Image (cartoon, rainbow, N blue to C red):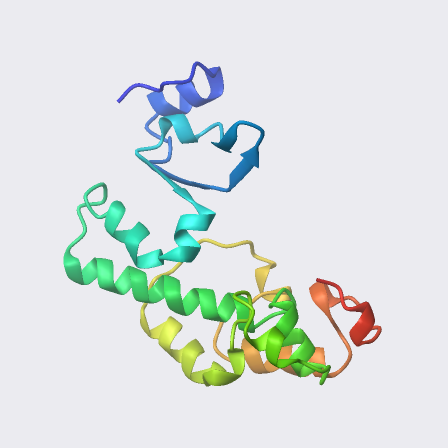
Length: 184
C-alpha cells in the first residue's frame, strides 16, 4: 500500500518497510467539526483515537484483529492487557490519576468526586494482584529506560510509588504542597 501523503521521510520509511500499520491520535474539536491530525495517520492501516480506545478498548482491539491476523484468544489477551494496563496507569506511579494521589495524600474526596466519569476507583482492586496479572499476560513493550522513575514498570512498583506519594511527593515527583495546591 503506497503512502497517501507525500512526505519524503515517510515515503522513505515506507519503502524500507518501517511505516507503522497502526497509530493512535486524539480527536480535536475545531470550528466546523472534529478533526484527527497526525502525519502518520494517512499511512496507517488503522488509526485509533484516544476517545474510542477509552470508551471501549476491546472494540479497538477487534478492529485491528484482521490487520495482525490475530486469533480470538489473542484478541482477548490483548484486550485484557489493555484493561489491566489502564488500571495500573491510572492507579500506580507518580503520574497516576489526581484522584488516586488525593486519596493517598488523605485529601477529602466527595461523593460527587467518586461519581465523576474520570474517577478510577483504584481502591476497589488490589494493586499487587493487578501488577501480577499484568506481568502474567507476558506482553512486553519497549518503553523508555527511565520509565520506572515515574511510572509502573515491574511488580512492586505500586507499593513503592504509593509510599513515595504518602511520603510527600506528588505528580512527576514534585513536592506535595497541600490538597488545594495539587498538581493535576
